[in-house]
Image 1 (tube, rainbow, N blue to C red):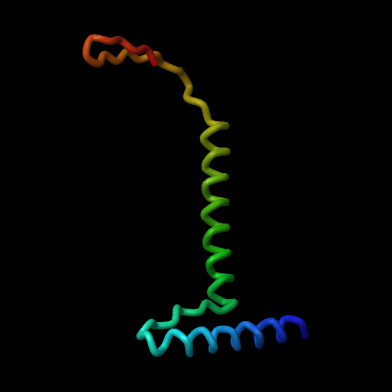
Image 2 (image 1 turned 180 degrees about the vertical axis):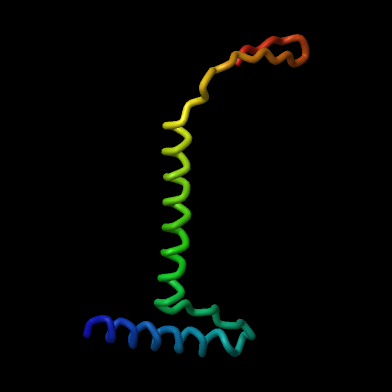
Length: 80
């Protein structure tokens, strides 16, 4: 019941703003519905889970033999 009231108030505010902007030639912005926000949440959530899973795998999978490598840049030696 409260959601319906909020949506009606929101749509009324949007109508008033669009009516004020119309004489100036400004186009109203696209409105995202609940489905669009749900898709956005699922997409960002799956990306976050993928990054987290990748971090866990990379941290728990050390190389068999760590090798020290020597790099030289402009006469400076760096051991990694």
